[in-house]
Image (cartoon, rainbow, N blue to C red):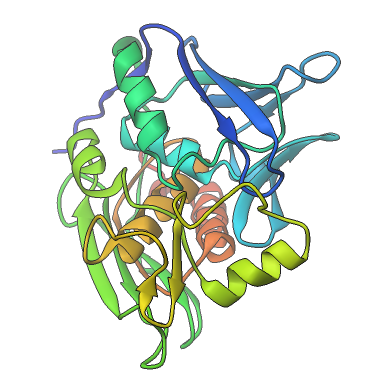
Length: 291
């Protein structure tokens, strides 16, 4: 029988500094403890009235290649690696104070956030964590890219991703599956970095974006493989896709218990899956099993 876990927050404040990959602007994050049922909330301390942006799919706005949240006129950009770190470590209640709209890119993974959060420490709280259990197959997408939620095999969340850009891509086809826990997230996924092709990087620079980021900061693949860099895992790219998926699924605002499988999906399709799960649970309450 499934037993819900207790909600968790930080024992102290964690700080991460860096610059945004897209904006190239310096940014400082403060992760602060928060009471039960707060959820993850971003606070734009650089704006008047310090607007708060809840990290839920209802506040997601469509921006290419990343996950962006907006509430009123205030927004936060490229939050997926922050959300993955918080979700992967089972940190449910936290205020993320930022002095810029874009999150720091760091090395393109969640490692810097995980290191800071672990150093601050995590504490259990008095109330159970809300859990939503998938009890039917939900499939979205087409033959080119798709994502699927299936009923759980066990008591936890399992994520699986198939990456295949074709025989002419310098990135080989890769598949990986992880049973998500704070331990497996830290060891198997947290250090997997953002990747893109050389032509994509050159196009972004031509648009005036990403001028501070270098091939040493993230994985840029040329015809012969990573440029001026080495992979941390032979399948680092698919591991990063799993990291992104965990960050996007966290926008459900609760633990999603099920088996999640994707083929070449991205942030938009991941978010659509979360919305579909929420809509089905709202319309048929027997499919929502809460602690």
